[in-house]
Figure 1 (cartoon, rainbow, N blue to C red):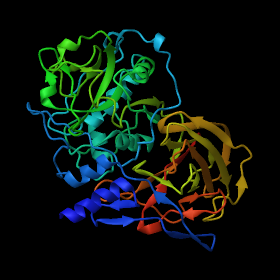
Figure 2: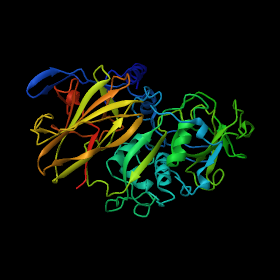
Figure 3: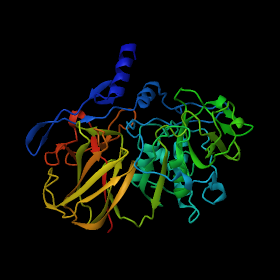
Figure 4: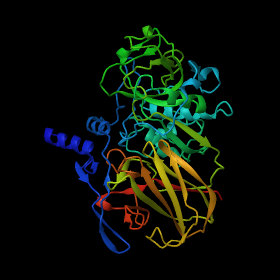
Length: 491
């Protein structure tokens, strides 16, 4: 790629003049469409891509873990996501700092599974994913989930050991592709002949806001105490690790070499003198790695509160799982989950998915992503719809309203049942209102080199600027696009 094309490539991703198609070097913009026979001019545009992701796509070496290897041969592999999360400054929750102890360690509370080894594979993100989910279920239940199944079945373009991120994990779990047991698909780089047996349903994948200062740690600490281990992204540089004290502190500004780990505790009094270079103050997180129990202190190490990037990159998250008996059917089109956002110059837009019922039953819950610090939503369901008309048929009387304080994937129990009939079409409409962000609808998108397997058909997903006139998303601007809206039935 010559210098002019590279500059245009980077500018397109940063300024978000549409959605970048990597292979063709072209821009795709939502421009026009039809609704119920009426031609309309669409004002929908895709959000700016994450500049880190644009750089990654330019510098990526296929088949090699992103970030390479440490000096002693351990692979990294945390890949930036394309999602624009710059607007996620803080969520709408507060934590009583006085309730947080000076020290806390999940290792002493039977809330952790064993330290794993990602071996020669850029799969740290999968171990961080299941490190938090396994911790969530302990001590009541002990699970060992299959990282191999996640890296092989994520559905994204990256090779299984090339790397990944928490957004990819969320998509895999939200479509109920996993988690499965380690014994059903061991970490040995092979594919079983049959699909993995599903052991849990993940209904909530909660992402925390990036730290804004060295001592902005309350929400990570609170999540560790309430839910278990928390997955965190940071940047690894060998010179910042001090093996004699198993401590890490990076104070540079080069944002690369991504790695994902799990925070399992902290020590506010951990001395600043224990790091390879001296941070401004005391304090460190206790961190579980995925480089085997022979590394660090039995697989664990300490990271300074003052580290430049620890907890300050997208991907700080914890996961909540439920029994597979909670819902019977998961209706959704976004197998690859949240790739980017869609908007029309306003914090409010409507998204609608239309589904044909595969069995007679009742809708019990609706799931979608929040891409903002505060998302107000209104859920409306229509049954017995006409093809291509989300608001036709019978409108269910109750509209579910609420607010989500933070980013991630959320399942909203309706509190009532909406009857559906096998073979009949129903629609789920969500009104999204963000806090000052003009791309309120999370969408799956076909992005070459990342999510090229995304596929959409006519009659599936729609968007509206006013809740009455609808733009079909399939094929607009040659895009393969679906809303990230799911419906769950009980029986």
